[in-house]
Length: 100
Image (cartoon, rainbow, N blue to C red; front, side):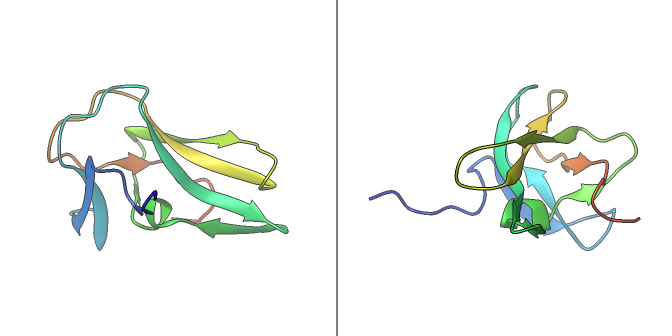
């Protein structure tokens, strides 16, 4: 049986210097890694997954949301690493769904 995991094993949630809680690397993560789905659009509404709920905004982000389409959902966005991330580093994106 496959167990649901809200975050990849390489990530954890902890206090952020940016805002509230954030996503942090528990180990080094390589450029181009697909960390999983952050948002899904279902019946016109965008919903955040646990992965998408804790990632903070940065103008110089180290990750990006990339749109993927599949048969099950209208749209979904996955978190892709833009450059190598060091252990302990906070993961960030440039917000596109929300005002900052």
